[in-house]
Structure formats: C-alpha cells, structure tokens
Image (cartoon, rainbow, N blue to C red; front, top):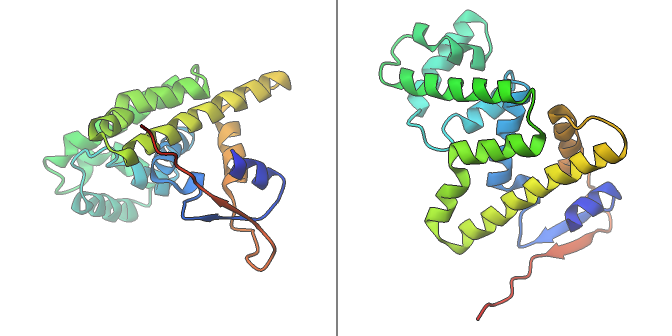
Length: 203
C-alpha cells in the first residue's frame, strides 16, 4: 500500500531488503494469466504461465512450438492452438491442449465475470494458493498474503469504477496496474523515501 501511494504521488522510493510488490513471482504469475486472457498475443505472458503450475511442458517442447511458429509466421499462442501440426510433440500434445483449453474457457468467462471473480477462478483452477498452503513455510504464507493483496486491489479498482459511474473491465484494471507498477522512471540520483519490511515475532 505504501508503494502504491508513493508511486501515485510520483515520490521516488527504494525498498531495503525487499522486492517491489509487482516484481514478486506470484504477482507476476497471476497478472500474466490476466494479460493472456485479455490478449493471447502477449507471448511473454504466455511463456511465463505455460508451465505454472507445472504441467510437464518443458523447454524442449516450447522450443519445438517456437520453431514451428516462426516457420508459419504466427503468434506463439496460435501455434499452441494448432499444436497437433507441430512435429515431434508426442506426449506433450495433450498437455498443451489441456493448457489452451483452460485458457479458452477463462477467456470466455471474462465476458461475464468481474476482475475479482476471474482472478479467483484462476487461483482456484490452477491450485496456485493450494500449492503454497501445502508448502507450509513462512515464505509460502507471505506469498499467499501478497495474493490476497492483489485480490484486494481488484476490489478497490471495481469500487473506484463504480463510484465514477464507469465499467470495471479487465483491460482497465491491467492498464491501471501497468501505470502503478512502472517504477523504472525513478531517478536514482534523486532524493527518495526508504521503505523496509518489518516482521513481528509471534508467540
């Protein structure tokens, strides 16, 4: 929350001993899912989530799809949709079809689900949080807290749009996140606010 307010106010900051919220792995993973649902031509986002969670789609399979994609002059996602024509996939074919079918269903649901509902659907169907809960570590618990915060951001966005009499859309949410997450414009030579995380001991 502090990061977001500083970014919106255009106040430079640095985090000591921590990682920017939007640079955290779980946040990047889930936002990549949302980006692919909005725009399947986002090759980087597709590549990020194709094996998250692990689906047994390895680097060799991805390379074969990319080679065929280049030969055909099409996008990576379109090549995945036509995976049966890609030579040498063998056992990976069903895994790719399962992945693309999942995304196609999510894209269809995006027409009537809210951003929060869509995010929850991704989390539930991928088992993302369930896997973290199964780890049972402090790091996993922290990552779950970050995911809860991301869900809260979808709620805040939807409430803000409602208050303004505007429609809350997936594209609108992603645009807002992109603006907030862009910290590359901060000049390191400027004065800046220092932030650090503080964990209290329990028990």
